[in-house]
Length: 573
Image (cartoon, rainbow, N blue to C red; front, side, top):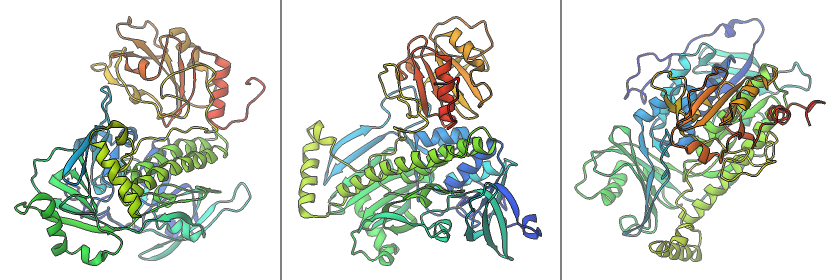
């Protein structure tokens, strides 16, 4: 728990109380089902997810404070939807700066603008900007509300002994505290301890990839400014020639500015205020008034571990993979790692699924990391050309993009984070029917406005609020008989909720067997390419894993078994 009540501006200075624990005095090392190492956004998200599923979690962090400065600030629509399920999404949105529009400039002229969420009918914006310490603070306060989470500050993991080969083996951790070391045992350890992961180092594992020879300055400045809440990116601007600049608005009238510096820049010199202030004034104008809140100089790499699972130790977030900051793919992909792993680990611990289900976490999120690294590397190559020929090509593209739409597809200031479609996942059931649209098996379900036909409250709501979470969801369109037939389709395998989506103006249902939602604007049917009788099976993390034009109960049960990595049996094909 925090040592004091947090206010909106306390989070940067907030300290969490160190407390001794009974495990330190135990004659034999205590054993826990799950130990998570690292209480950043990824570790906290995973701990909350597991706790809400009834899993007891020990969460260790070597510090007792939240992050400083802006660090990760852009949190994508998909991540906000995950935070909704964790119980703190609205708080994030209320505090954050919502934005959908970005503008690109080349030298002294705007090239074009783009809207990341041009469609209506979504609960959450494309992005919010919110300093990482707020995100961590809200997650930490949510974690403190959950009795299944034992959050231990100033607990540094200094030794990891992996499990052996027998079923009862566990991971042994040596933890150093102010009073000295103690030992814990865990059925599963999840390393969420960042790019310099101590767990990874203790196991002798590596994260490999490409380090980019460039430096960037982050300057957080506080000022009153009339600029809109948009993402502004400059290539080769007159006020910072031959380099790039990025401007973002954050809460509390704090603006983040990223200046490309070049590889030869001296990091310590560039962080000094007398060097930062002239750069900011060159951007904002000589008369601009601001205060410098925080600064950092960074380089970056695009790297990942070869495998994210090593027996009973699994890696997530920056501990498993790293990308450049262009595209906001770091923290967002890490939270999506947690979203992918939480329901699977809970299912294995409850005996609903075999240990093999955890292998799908590794394969799915390794593929997602490859996608993020690919996008991140391409963006970096475009932003920081490594040869004169590359620079000439880039500048020609930027010139053409002012007037020609085809060239705009080649401009890359960071392909902004979107959820990975899990093509080829072993948990997917391939389509046997013809569908159009993006909701293929492996895709993340999209939202749409709904009205609860049961009339609870004002009856308004959103589709994703009723899909996934505690278990699987059968999403049935305009077929009450199919919806009723699916009530017992899980046959004890896993929790299954049935959501019946009906067209606008449909009569109030006379049965209470299903949740019935009215598709008030027809967007759900459009986005899922649904006809009467269409059925989708959606995982607890809201990824589609199977779909049919008409219900086949046998095929439905087979798809559910497949999504849990259960072997097929005589009654399923």
